[in-house]
Amino acid sequence: MSQRSDDPLFGEVPASVPLADAPLVRVLAQVRFSKVSKISNESYIADFQEALRSQYPHVQADTVQSVELRVSDKEIQHQAIETTVWRFFDPERVMRISLATDFVALETAKYVSREDFLERMRVILGALASSISPPLVERVGFRYVDRLVGQDFLSELSVLIRSDLLNVLQPNLAEHIEISMSEVVGKTAEGKLIARYGLAPKGFSHDPEVAPPVDEASWVLDVDSFSTGCASTQLEPDFLCAELDKVAARSYAFFRWSITEEFMNRFKGK
Image (cartoon, rainbow, N blue to C red; front, side, top):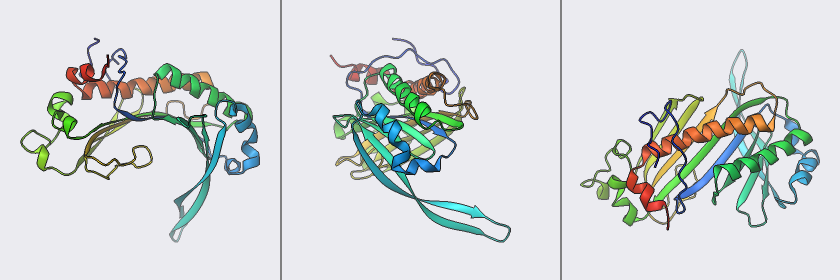
């Protein structure tokens, strides 16, 4: 097995080791671009839908509410706005594409490999470039969310997870702790990385959209690596997938740094 780096933010990325039984909850890749307001209109995204319809035939429109700040010389105003996010699903509803006015994303709860995932993203970006052609890219990101569920795993955290990430979750205290969530934001060789990790009680999630709550206590590791190195460039699928590969590798490096050899052996599968 390739040795993990002692520097997960700038060090060498270890070779990927497939884990047949990996406790992955969600994998997500995203490309953000300059806002295209017309994407909210169904007629405007028709060509994008048609280009992907054979692979992602199910479509739905979600209304998302947010707050926009408007600053003038006299005051700061908060304005509630609604935008449409288009969702496209494969026949089994395992893969989901999200298209909004300023980003496109692909996510799944059943991850095969980075190569497979990025190839799917390449096709999606190709459809976006030919049908809508957003003016400029702003950033790319790749996110892995892992979760160990149930007391069988929680009782073994000290042998599965690097001690630096366990904080107060030591054997003599863990059974008495209800919640312990931490967040780290750091610079990386490619851009930045946000890691959220810790013990979550039954029915709680730090981000319900990507990690819906479960009926048991769990330990979560959510690693989000992103880069603005492609900012102000054109939407070119091959280039952006290469950039996504870099930030995905950095997320993987942090994951490998966070776990132990026992974790790797446990989830290799038969």
